[in-house]
Image (cartoon, rainbow, N blue to C red; front, side, top):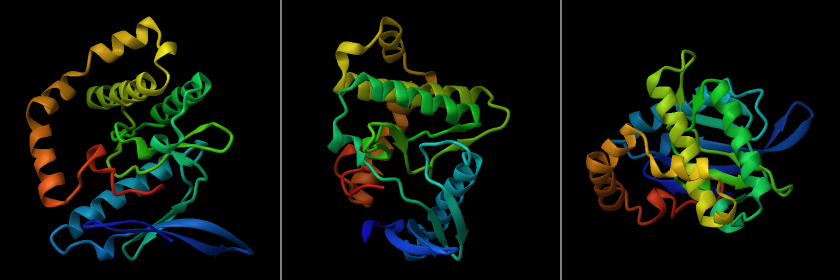
Length: 216
C-alpha cells in the first residue's frame, strides 16, 4: 500500500517475514527520488535511521529494521494522524509530553512537530511519532539541541491549543508566547524561502508539506 509519493521517493506499507512471523513494515525508498534530490533524500533517510536506532527502547516510535540499498525499513504503528483523530482528551497530551521527554533524554529532538501527520493517536488513545528525517541526534545536548527540544514542546502546545485549549496551563501559555530565538530568525527569513521551495518547486500546498501525506 502506497502511503506517500513525492520528489524524495516513495513510502509504502508492506507485509514482511521476520523470522517465523509476518509483520507490517514501512519502507521509505529513496531510489525513486528525483535525480537532483537523491543525495538529499538519502541523507534524510540516513538521519531517520540514526534517530530510530537511538530510540530503540522508547515506546511510541517506530522500530528500526534496516537501511540498505536506498530503502529504510521501520515498523508500522497503528493509529490515526492528529488532523484526523482531533484529540481533545487532556490525557493524550499528557502522554505526548511524556513521549517527548523520553525522546529528549535519549538525545533526539524531532524538529518537525508542527506537522500534524507526524503525530499519531493510537487505538488506545496514546501518542506516537513518525517521520524523523529532520531529527537532531546529540549525546551532548548542547545549546542547539536544547533550543530544538523546546520547540518540540512548543509545537505540541500549539496542537493542544487547537484541540484542547481549555486545559492549557499558565506555564504552557508562557511557552507558547515565547518562541526560541532560532524560531524567530526562521520566521523572519528562512520561512519565506522554505515556502517558495515547498509550494512552487515541490508542489506542496498546505500543512507545511503534509497535505499530500496519508498516514505513517
